[in-house]
Image 1: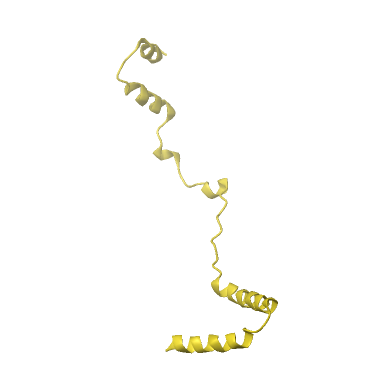
Image 2 (image 1 turned 60 degrees about the horizontal axis):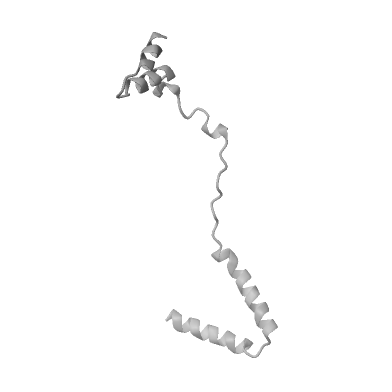
Length: 91
């Protein structure tokens, strides 16, 4: 039912402007599109620019391995032992 009413209404507007010049029709198109912009426009979320302050205090060092322990784990994980490892162990 609304489609029939919509067709009748648009046909009555068309009958009013069908004989108008191209400039008038273009001006009307501009006014109609400007009137629809607020209804159609979508707000795009802004991308946040991160700074170092955003990440301050997010993590602690208690979950991370000490550098010396990490180096030892890497050395111990090697499959081939070399003389260089013996020298490092002596130091």
